[in-house]
Image (cartoon, rainbow, N blue to C red; front, top):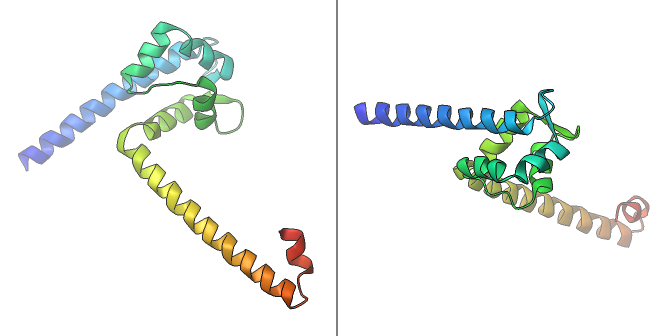
Length: 137
């Protein structure tokens, strides 16, 4: 029980340390001070050796700033602190591996459904009821 508590305490300390790093990176990237990071701000921080070192301190190698920004952005063209923290935490460690497995599973399910839909359309087309399916395919 003491070992378990010690592990939990170490995990809390590590998470607090990571959150502090995230805050520092975000604050550095948010050069306008508006609470959001634009693509230009993101690229600027990643083009500096200090910015790259900050990302490496989070165990993230960022080869292409635009791709990472797109992963973090919810579609409004800027990244909030919450989006940044959530996204970076998802890009780290086990969560990343689990997410990849979940995405692969979801893709297989989608492909299975598409295959079934295609078969259904082909069968309807052969039966002369393919007007709707021919538009879908």
